[in-house]
Length: 391
Image (cartoon, rainbow, N blue to C red):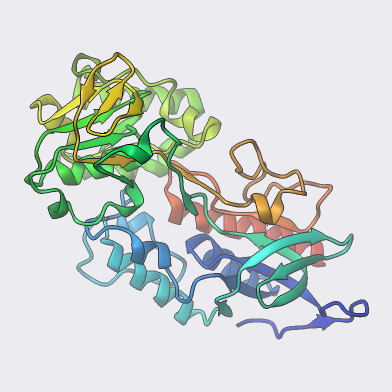
């Protein structure tokens, strides 16, 4: 656990102040920053609202694999088992997170929900489901995909079919002989379509508002994500151009099949609206073969069908809303003025608000490198800043 915990005196009726950091969230980002802080000599406690590690990974569908390469998706000091595929299955990721926590003996307390945090001038007060806690530093690592988001479409309550979020995809075999509409052409939408394209489904549709920034998982035997460290070092406009050229060379002109052009480049969208780059593993071939038909935006639901923006009606049995996530941080942080209109923190990694010293965020935005590599980088940067302030 690193440095021995040291609690400082506090005011009457308030908890002792931890002379160190409380990390909120025990996902990859939270575990990585806790480890980095401990190595830097900063006493750390992790608060996790779930009852076990990697709960979101446990809940995701059975077909889920990382879109990022194994060699760039591990946490410090722990490797994947020999024979792990290039793109690890979710069960392997769950094992990796548990191995990391056990190897480094990270101090995790499960089943604690942090309800609100408040700045007290020289420390932070946390109101939790198990009473107040206080610390000099707080790192929020609850994740950018904490709450699945489904728009309030007109008529959806009257629809006789099923509407699910892509987070609840389940097994591809569950869609056998079903007509399926996927709404959203981002990373989650293409992940669902990649699996469905190999299943015995009926007709499939993709409703796309914007065209995706889309890369293949492999070109020949080369895993494209292996090139991400190089891409991450390029200026944004150069990375945009490189991704667009790769997409065009590998897939051709996808607008011929109804996909709208991308609103902006892949690297630009990562920074502007936090849209992750989609990975193709069979969906494009299904689009070109006519198994997946690209259609306009969804306008409204009726009892037995779905009406699109062009007035066309289609009748899916299941609608998969690949419509993103929300951080769900408004209740915890809404009074601090550190969230944008979508609830995403204005600061991430080593950057923070000088008016709120000691508050950090990690893992809140997508990265070309992927979430694990980004977790390592941001963890080291935050640990350096915190350790420097303690000197």
